[in-house]
Length: 208
Image 1 (cartoon, helix red, strand yellow):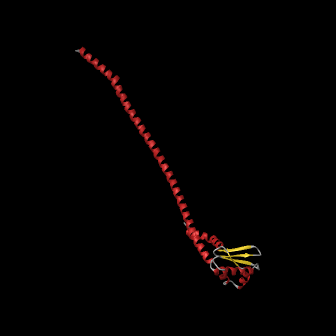
Image 2 (cartoon, one colour):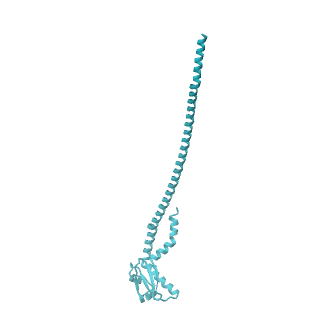
Image 3 (tube, rainbow, N blue to C red):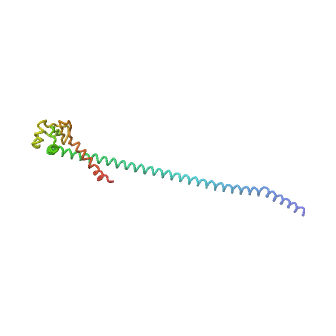
């Protein structure tokens, strides 16, 4: 009996030894594998989160840059559109109205006669007695102008006569002795007026 128990003990010892030498190390190795797997998984997750945060920041920066470019482009387009609108308003409103107004006023025979009478008075005040030719608009007949001129002008004009020019209003005076032409035509007057009032017009209409 004692020998049998001794055999069992030996077998148990052998089993225990086998368990310690094989099973326990295998369990320990399995635990280490699992722990390492957890550590590796955690590292992968941390790296993935890090890369995701980098990608998000990069995307946000790109979106912000594109937003700035878009806003800048939009602002420039608005400025260009407003400037084109201003130019159109000036061309179609200011220039056209000024053109029509000056042409209408300067194409009136009374206005032309008034300019010539004033011009003669100025010449007399300055002591200038040069002969001159009065060049009137093509839309006005010399006869209608003659009927409105002073006697002094008629006397001076009779020497050279009244010519018809290729302009819509106003008058040109050619001083024969000095070989110069004083241009008071509608084109010149319109430019002079525009030079003085265009800035006020812009300030009034374009103060935006």
